[in-house]
Amino acid sequence: MPRLLFEKTGEAVWISHLDLMRLFQRAFKRAGLPLTHTQGYSPRPSVSIALPLSVGIESQCELLDFDLDCEISDFDEIRDRLNAVLIEGVRIREVYATGRKIRDLAFLETHIDLIYDDVSSQDKCDLLQKLFCSDTLTVVKKTKNGMQDQNIIPMIKSLTVSEAGENCIKLKILHCCQNPTLNPMQVVTAIEKYLPELTPDAKRCRRVEVFDAIQNVFR
Image (cartoon, rainbow, N blue to C red; front, side):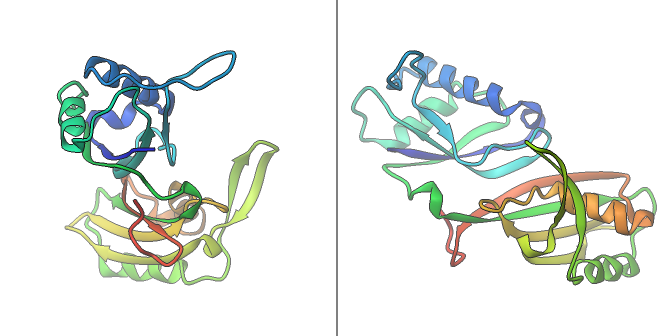
């Protein structure tokens, strides 16, 4: 099944996952690229996104699988026709003839900007780096069975902290994205819980890249 790599930025970050799916279904139709449909009582267009993206988070590495009910071998043409009808902030970067099995997807690189009204300092970076060197950082996670405590440290492969301007600190995180899954905003929750004095006045989160278990770029 063909796969495309797309980004979701700007005002488009406020589109929910379900609305994004509907957006792509309409985009394929408007671009003259008919999709096949699933079998069964309620057929649905054959599009699926690998890792649903939370509202408010940017990404430059989203993966969408699709199946066309027509023969088009020029994947650049598919990209260009879709980009011509998609909204601002959602853009196809590449289209592939086929993709790896989603079960092989293991890690996400996510960047979080912590923005403060006051001037940031190296002391803040040192405190944050020390916090994530802990063996245990427990935060509350909402699950199907209710609220549960979760230790996020085992799901963080690596985390670096650096200053990114006078009032911004950047966290670069490589973390699990499947079995188990870490929502990167849990990292901010941990800061608010364990270092409340470093609670940011604003924050920005964006996915940067996806990797397999041996940290090769996943496509």
